Amino acid sequence: MLAILLMAFKSNAQETIKQKFKKLEWLIGTWDRTNTEPGKSGYETWSKVSDVKLSGKGVSLEGKKIVFVENLAFVAIGSELFYTVVVTGEKKPVYFKLTVLSNDSFTCENPKHDFPKKITYRRNGNTAKAVISGNGQSIDYVFVRKTS
Image (cartoon, rainbow, N blue to C red; front, side):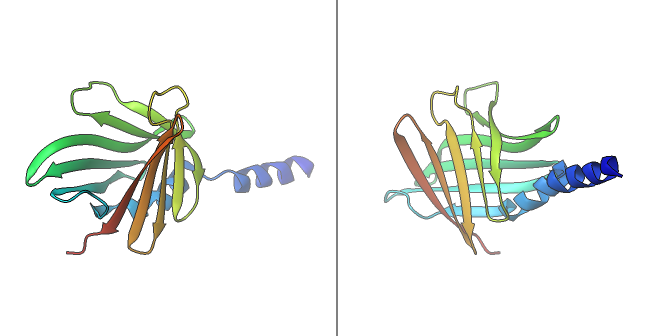
């Protein structure tokens, strides 16, 4: 009887990979950055590739010229989720382990990376704030969901 109770508790205590990805689906769509300097703009776009993968892209522009692109993804490796980033000119992704997850926010960390070491997103309705931080520095990105 005790073994059955322990198994039931363990299955309820740990969310499945699919359940974690479900909590991240609020990212899906296009998010326009609202706190850029005059003449600059940016956006992120996210799509669902499968029940266990999200794919995204972050783009920064000066006028209409693209000046920076990063390919983003949420992937599962074993029982862990990782936010991956590949910036223009790099071949290998940087992995940030998902450390905190709720219905409206998440935090991913990689203490070995130079900068950032931590990435946090928090949604409030149709707005979201992403903060990248580490080494005493912090940069905020404020987004609004683009409507069709």
